[in-house]
Length: 450
Image (tube, rainbow, N blue to C red; front, top):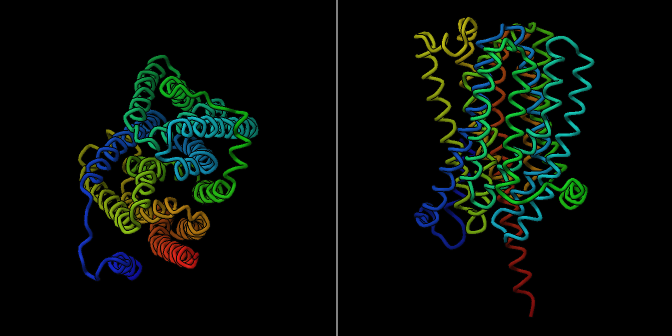
């Protein structure tokens, strides 16, 4: 609370405004931003729906052990996705949001080419892991390895669209993905191919359709040859964003593997089932940078005050939405929704919903600070916050799992996420202070020039 109050004081006491004076709201920008954020919410909702449908379908169709194997595959996908975003789309959004069309097209070609190279590299690693693991989990990794290039490319198109305020194109792309996936899952069920391999393959192949559509929508072909130049030119941000995303997903992945060792694969399935029922909001948190960072960059060019208020609204709004969804689940799951969503898994999953809700709320409260740090291009500070939160999350969750099973694991994760709120907002406050100091030094240098 002290960190948030300090931010409010900083907003109200900027030069040119009196303390306590109301901040003028540019309603034209609010309406335009509202429209863009509306498309962002719609697109992220469609993307969340695609992943949510897959998770629910797998949970209902397969048992706890196979669902646990699917969980290992999914957290590996999240690791690859964050690597792609850190190297390609995160620097792109910070540096090319709202740029002229020729500049944007050249940057998009290199950015999407980098995402495709990342998908090829991580896909090769997944194929090797699948051969080494064998069994159900190994087949899931093989399916993931075959489809990761398409998954990474499709995600990069979404960031490209939102950087130019073309969220409706991203929504169309994700809708096509969902439209291909749903009948594919139904076909697998009726044809007797309801296995982890085919579910993951259908999901990734459907994303590849969206990846191809992105080329038609933009008229831009991903440049594999341009990936090297992209990484060289943006290594200052890309290296830190890669480390930041890797820290977060590596923490999640190591926690999942740790839960497997401590509690067994069935417990991993129950934890993943609790994650699944909270899935729409968790995926929204992960995808906030898709449409929030371009808006924050746009606001920052006009006023750091407006950007900071925007980030506070992002944190407060997403945390409250997470709370509302968690309360709804606690009421509705025992009344038939649990069996509808998870089948026989819902009963052992139900006690995990409350700590999962608190965890999701903490993630929401952190999200606004991370949006602000990315908009400021404060990669060093966002990396520092991510590392602290990742280490805390892994330590608290694994300790909780050892002491109190699956419930203890999620209570530990929830505690770590709320500590992360203080860490992340503290880093944003320092980044804003550094920006103000740099602005003052630049102003003084200009005044000193005769």
